[in-house]
Length: 244
Length: 244
DNA sequence: GTAATAGTGTCTATGAGACAATATCCG
DNA sequence: CGGATATTGTCTCATAGACACTATTAC
Image 1 (cartoon, protein in one colour):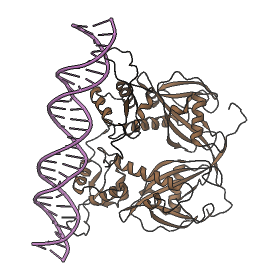
Image 2: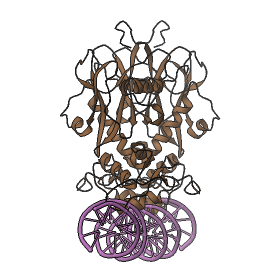
Image 3: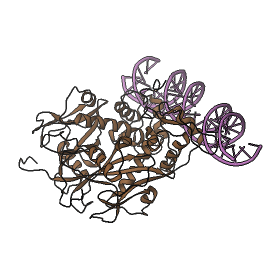
Image 4: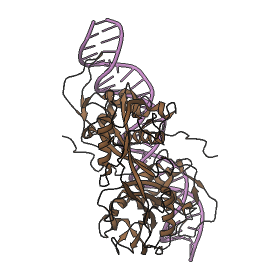
């Protein structure tokens, strides 16, 4: 190791994106159909190699976001998710992938990008259950991304990133319900988000047309860290019986 | 991008380790004095390049742990911390570093490793305040590592990893106090950790010699996720005044 | 006994969750 | 008016935190 002539190995660096959104009150992830080998024809996360040696990782993530999903980076929360670098995960050689998590409000159907034969929103539960197999280790990455989103919702105001610029409290509640996969009491939820100062603030815009009493509109507040946090129920899978 | 002849750039991949421990009831991080350029003579986190192209990232982290800190990997919690790949952070070229967080119980003074002129435990507050400048962007990595440790203590049984195989509840309390930088009520802490099933379990070994009533000894339980979580006080830096 | 630390009991304030009741729209 | 959803009120239970108190050692 103190050999001065030893040179470290190089690796290929890629970024992969877990782009989550809500459609029909369900959590969806953006997938692209691979147009090139390996895994040609299979569904995969949008992503790709570093464009050039001096490109910043987050810049590459934003670039892929634009190229493969036609999404403007400004409106999106982008968060480092993890590193996936198990040898052998990519048949082309040693590829280490840096995964990012992006949260988007409801979006129209995506169009295929340059390297992709197609692109579509896919329900996360169908990906996680294995009903739809993904290329590489992308199922695992989606799994980590969804879990991260669930955890982040508890302590940050991320949920508003799923919503339109203005939203009702009920719409915000749907975000939590979809991501957490549970249902919440609307009345308790209502007071809870209101009590969390800086989370949401009133937006006295036009009310939406609905059946029933029209709801007030809100927009995201300045707070990014939530206190007190939104507690996700049924966190304890096994509260008892662990010890005799 | 659909240019078949384009080949992606390669990067140098490194792992860096934030190894935290408790000494004199204070949080310390392991640093090494660099014996080679760049930043020769400066203090830095232990770490290094991938040993060979097929080496797994976590394997590289464990290897560096052994080489530079002489720590057995078995006893350590090792957790992915983040990726630091800003262009220009390393004068040798495009180096992307994957950082890992390791938690160790109290350890003796380290000895210098192969690439290091020296090694020592350094108080994290002195690193974070900038009293001691580190090489590269390592101060930022330490900052992220400490914050991660603080957050992880809340929801996992990680705190026991700072302790010896058996420990008293007061010793466990010292861990929380040192990492969080606060003081806790011993009586409430006592009942709280006891109530968290599977966190700690009784170990009827010899009691330690102390002044005062000898404490019961415990060891780490099977639980890794804590429920209910240990709440870290003073989480809200600004509970009021955010909005008019 | 005193000093010192370990461990228990109990009170209070706060928040989560259940759920009744009221408000405001559409038709 | 009835139907539907929004918003408020109130009750109950669990828990965090404060802190008086008891227990067990060394001297």
